Image 1: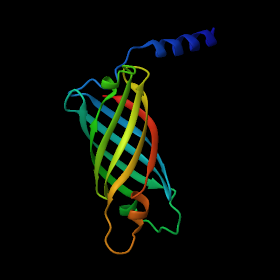
Image 2: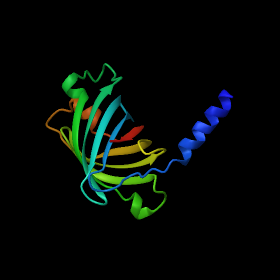
Image 3: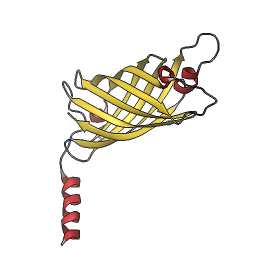
Length: 163
């Protein structure tokens, strides 16, 4: 009986109708992990829809697992980004539960781009995957710990929630 209940629950979750990006005033919260050279970071993202296919947001990340050779302090480990997304999942028309969003980041550590995808299993919960890459790296003189951590390609995965 317990197994039947679990199977029915899973099946009902898969059948729930969700929409990945609903446009103006849509709010998303993401929490996940970034994988990169020299560190692994935890991150939190908030996106707010300004129009049918674009949103703005903020991302904060904190680098963990940094080798001692980098000698990173707290201010080197943390980063804050403002971001702009072009939510084109509805334009691609793959699935209403799927959203693809390329965009730009304006960070305390660099200027860069990102591309990500979200898939919602229910009205409030989904998963995301995202890549980030620097376009213009901030650098003054000798290469610092923050530049070694934040000025590189990252790959992230995690959970996304509708607010």
